[in-house]
Length: 382
Image (cartoon, rainbow, N blue to C red):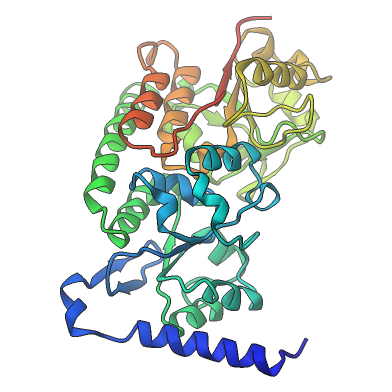
């Protein structure tokens, strides 16, 4: 559709105004911030950001590790259960920060032609773009939409808590902390995270050879009626390896993720079964996360492991079947998932590890938006 003259005028005014806001000012020179993001780009801000747009709703959990009032920093957000995907997350935000109801809603974010005008209309001073949104849409540092934001005076900071969380979470959190003037908070969380993670890394490196790694089937989004979606060589595979397991999906899938046949899973008969659950909130579906009770989580998990084929797995019969909140894969709090996996894969080495204590400390020391609800399921022999 061709824009009307008033729309063109408004857009031009927004672009011009944003450009003026971005112009150098001697009075602000002492506050200027320069950041190198995880995409290798240099990002410059005149002052700590106070009107942020997040491309991904899950990035709010990262922001909440750094600032006691993260919603106060937002110029707009996805703003509806259908846009943020996770209804429990949406309700938790509104309970803790009721002022979020008044924020402009941008819906689901995508780097298409309409995103520039929508975001610029909020007059942000920073767009935080997930690397998945940038590269998943065929873009990245040279994406013309990113260039359009920057030409309009809106800095774009690319972060990654999902595609390579083990390699980029700390750097992403530190960059986000610098952008909002909370670098010390980011450094404190990173130090806590590194200590927990390195304990697992050191123990596995010293005591777990390839022959001692249990075969693991991680059943991704297990609430889906179609079996058996699995990580291949992407995020969750890295978690499995770090924690001392061997992902059977990586033996069969050439890419990041993919569908395994039930026949393949049965032929491998893995030592450990891990079902990931998230925001699929339909009655009877396997759901984990904020607002989910332990009873509901266990009932949903039982319905998954009772399916034909899966019910006969050695892992299910022996009590080595578990449920894990899928959104750990998007959060700097994924160190809790690493501890859980380590305890499940190598119980003799990690019998004294306490993921709940780690989660409790994250909530007490860092998280302005606590991670609550049923986030994992553990069972005994059937």
